[in-house]
Length: 425
Ligand code: NAP
Image (cartoon, rainbow, N blue to C red; front, side):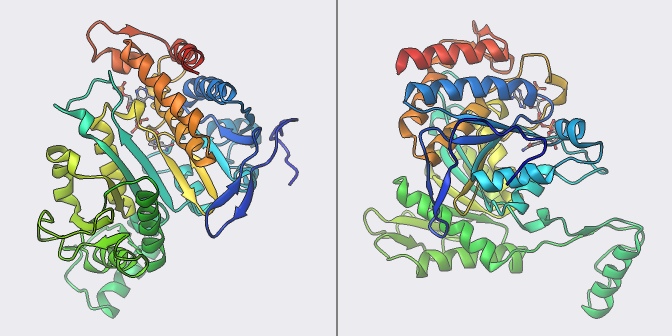
């Protein structure tokens, strides 16, 4: 494809798809990787993360050709005031298969819809994956933060985030109200007067492919358990169905000695269940209870698979247990496609001051390296970040919680990680 405002790098090769159905890609040693710096603190953390990712790639015999793409404010500056997500940004990610992005601002209440949600839906990046693990030296509110080693799989394309909703006072919302009350017989359920209405679609396809991804991940990464987290006791035909479809995948698509679908796990403890040795156990838990167990029985959980809204809440809460948003990485996965992005947003009040923590974006890069099959570079990133933090060299967000820490700017912190990469390589 030819691009208008995107600068295509003059070196580097494209990542190609090998087998889309089985999520296989061919990765050259000098791939072109699109990057969106993002809004707010994106302008601080993206250049810093780029520097660190380059250092880890080069130390392990690779070279990244970055292809800068625009979205949010940077797109409005280049493409015009009403262009938030240019077509060529989406197309470049589609074409190049693997990309990384900083945070993008979403106005609350009015304005345009979330660009993050739009990207995930347009590219069918159906699984949002967040590995949540403790890094030595990071301050945490928990007594034993090292017990946290969970990977959350959040469904990314449907649920109340699908964007099917109507604003109070519009003709559309009144049509929906009439239909629900008169034709579907739900009279006296909704209050009189102005009302907003949203729809929560949860499909068999969306649920099963998410749970399948989570189970495959657990098998590949030697994890013991996949927990399906939902509110099926209340929302039986959406959340409950998510649980049923998920258990069907576990029960019907894998041999019992590889994946064991625990019966009645919603209501009974599983300690006594006889699970085949080495099998991944798949169980169900209710979302509200899960929020407390995550804190009180952290080491019992491993891989979590959830509908969109539960996944949003639970993954942020898990991130808080290991030190907060500044260090929590994530990635969105589709078929033979990945978009890495940190959990945090654009934190406007910290923007442009060389103070934000780039760790979350750097560790999202680690997840991207994992996906590329660059294991050595991924390990090097982890070790260099951990070494830097445990030596007390940190950005403001961690420094205010550590006694005797040395506060560094975004850039200087990235330099300290690069030095550790050089030393450890
Ligand atoms: P936020 O941007 O994540 O920031 C909330 C607070 O978390 C910050 O004020 C800061 O706390 C801390 N924080 C976040 N990232 C940090 C970092 N890298 N280093 C240090 N501290 C960090 O959440 P928000 O204020 O709710 O959202 C702002 C905008 O971002 C909204 O428009 C939202 O829609 C958008 N957003 C985008 C994404 C995405 O692009 N995927 C995700 C979430 C939100 P202190 O003030 O205490 O220092």
